[in-house]
Image (cartoon, rainbow, N blue to C red):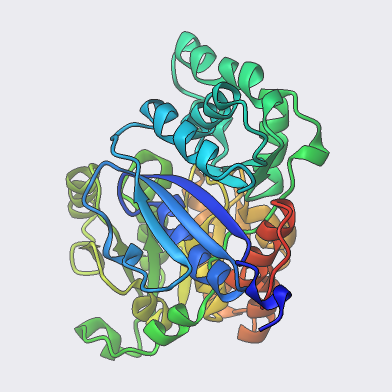
Length: 378
């Protein structure tokens, strides 16, 4: 064995707060295996507010799962200081704003020079738009104090990058855009699995799909009202995948519109991709997004899509409407009309799949390594 082959692989640390199965967590479930495929070693430093997800039980000789032993991002400073001092050349990728701030403090107090890269997945200004002014101030103003002390902040869309620039004052060259690692082999494998439901046998009633946590952000009331307009003119059905605090109010809305036989709230489903594969149209009705992972997944499976022109992500993904209609947020009439047009004249599957090629996990992984100053081995 020569000396070059005896060198250990490059290592990186990733800090993530796991509070459920949201977009950030789901992205990490796909990014980490893709990173390992490049030949690097990965330390996942986790903040676990719930039991450790089964998706993180990765059996790989170059993967280590390190529980930071706290349940909130603001409490990780001592543990991160120890890690940085023990691994003084390991770059650190830190997801979510509060964890980023703690990592900046930890690096400063530990007097180490590890490269520090943040990652932001949401359009923070849009998510806080209706909060009280004082709450918005204290949520965003510290970003101007902390973020000048970080090397780079990766943003998942150009809209998130521009919002982060406004909030932090960081120049755009320190805010690179790397698309979410949404598309991997698992997506296609799961999409081919059988799905049993009576609606799937009704060829005369195309299935329209929405998906996401049942919260105000996803604005499923507008989707349901738009569907009611569409249903008045043609036979079709709507399924909304996901669970959340708005389930009861959505169920009442469905009942009040007389749609109980044509709209299904599925709750949590283990395999949303099988539903996507059986659908004729996917609709994103959100008020805001960071990127819109479910929209990407549907397009990767060749499914026609309609989306609100919300901040941020969908307009970039759909090239301003070239790959699918964009409608104003909260406009049920425009949404219904776009759904009708797309059902009548869907885009070719290959065209949609080509549009989201930048969202492949292996592409994202290599771009993250480049930002972190690591050369892939594989």
